[in-house]
Image (cartoon, rainbow over all chains, first blue to last red; front, side):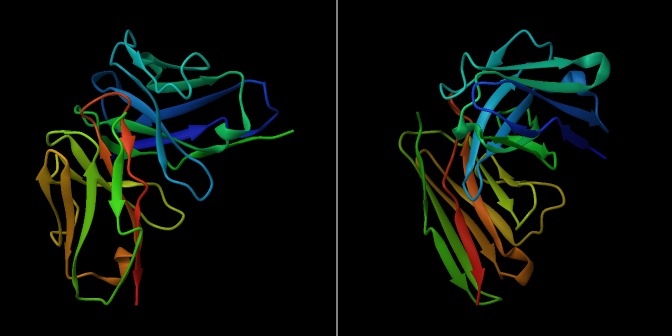
Length: 118
Length: 107
């Protein structure tokens, strides 16, 4: 059974940093692209980042480019999101997702809430 | 960026009805259009991939159609458990984008 478990969310002040983690199990982690998708409170879904199987290629929307960094450790079956220079508009539940080999999101974690506020 | 417009924003239906939800893209996404269901207080779940391909474990009452810019998610015989928000998402070009969702309410 595919499982994705996020951690690392919490309350952080504007301008500070936070690192999210996602522990994957139930599949061969190194064979799949992985992604982060977020959802602001009572809002829709927004793609945040995608990383290739080896980690050599990463992709971001303009809203987070230069501030967020996605990475992975295939030996630990873990995905990460380093978030710097956080803004209030980054407040959201962040989901880890397994890419379906076609830029779609086949499996999702339960999410971790990040609140950016002073 | 590709903008996905979903309609209606909210749909109130009677159990047993057949319904259709629309997703329109601002430019062609071929068939790189995928549908998700998000039940209250749950994570999203993939329903349909590549516009019309079914997903293992998803009830057969869910189906998708379309290509290019116009897509439809159909539910043949809505059930109470289908109370959810439905999102479309395009994977044809970066940045990947989602529609704003259609909320399904059960009468």
